[in-house]
Length: 140
Image: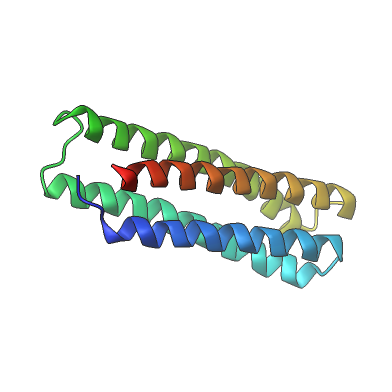
């Protein structure tokens, strides 16, 4: 299976989004609400960018003839990236709940800080999982 350059871009997008989640957590801890708002919106954009990028990678590989049923390596690639995408969508669900409450003003600051910290921890975990998966993919 080829190593599409877009996988490298997607990896960069995840690293950047994880960095911004850290920055949002720090901003929430310092009650810098404008930075929190901008950071949360940027993180959502980057997460959707990653998902679209993954779909584009799949489309590219399918166009080249690398189907799920072609061989076990292809199957694992599609399985691992699909499961990672599903976990990212789960993270987006909680990001969305946190962001919606924040934008509506329907929060208390300590609960907002806690929600952002939990989302950030989950996001960093997703980055770590992706780096392991991506490392395994490029090692083969």
